Image (tube, rainbow over all chains, first blue to last red; front, side):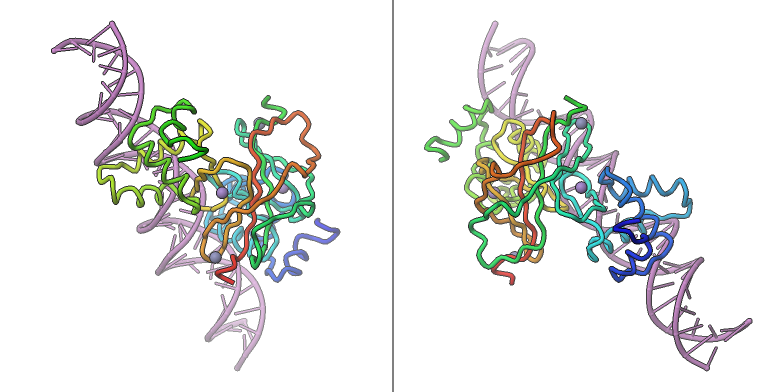
Length: 135
Length: 135
DNA sequence: TATAACTTTGTAATCATTACAATTTTAAAC
DNA sequence: GTTTAAAATTGTAATGATTACAAAGTTATA
Ligand SMILES: [Mn+2]
Ligand SMILES: [Mn+2]
Ligand SMILES: [Zn+2]
Ligand SMILES: [Zn+2]
C-alpha cells in the first residue's frame, strides 16, 4: 500500500508492468526506511524468492529510477542506495554505522546563484556525521 | 597560491609533510574548477611526472580529505570527485556531460527537523540536471 | 654512516555494477 | 489450444573504481 493504492496499481500508474519480482522489489523499498542498496534488496528477497537474480534487482531499480518510482542516492561513497519515498526530504549518513536517516527540510527556501540557463531535475541535501545511536 | 600562501605552506599548516607529489596533487585540485576524480588527477599529472603511481594519487587524496584540505564529493554515481575549494558552496552535475559546476548557496538558512542528538560534520547540497552548454 | 620513519611505487585482489546471451514467462494471433 | 512474438528474468562473464599489500626509495635523525 502506498498513497492508498496497491503496489501493483502504483506500478501501472507509472507505466511499469507489475511482474511478481517488480512488485516484491518495490514493496521492499516503500516498506523500508533503511535506504537499501541493490545488494541489500537482493539479500532481503532471496530468502523468499530463491530464484531471484541479482541482475534483475539492478535492472529493476534502474527502471524504477527512470520512471520516477524511487530516488537514487549517491550519498554513500561505495554503493548506490535507493529510496521508495520520492517526496522531497533530506538525508543524513552516519560515518560510523553507515545508516541513512531521513529528516525534514525545505530546500525551496534556498536561493542558488550562478545557475542561469541550467535545467534542474533533482535536488539533494545530504548531511554527514555521527548519528545519535553512535555518539 | 591559496589564501595568499604557497601550496607548500598550506600543506604544512594542515599538518601534512609537503612532498613533491603532494604539492603537485594539491596544486591540481586548487587550480581546477572541474572537480576531478583520482583518475583525472593521475592523467593530468602523469604527463609531467612519469613515475607517478595511481596508488599515490588515491592515498594522497584520502589523506587530504582526512586533513580537511579537500572535499570529497559523492555526487557522481560511479566515481568519487574531489574539490580543492573547502568553503561551503553547492554543486550541480550535468547528466549529459557529467561536468560538475559550483554555485552559491547558504544552507545555514535551512532548518532541519528530526536530527536531535546527531553530530553534523559536513553539509552537501547537490543538484542534478542539464547544464546550460548541454541544453 | 647507521637506523628508523616516512613516502612512493607496482601488482594483485576486491567489490559494485554492467554487458550479454540464453531461458522462461506472458500475451496476442491464429 | 497451439503458434508466435514480445517482455521479463536469469546466470555468467566482463568492466572499472578502489583498496590491500609488500617492496623499493627517500628523508631525517642519532
Ligand atoms: Mn529518504
Ligand atoms: Mn566545488
Ligand atoms: Zn550511526
Ligand atoms: Zn552539460
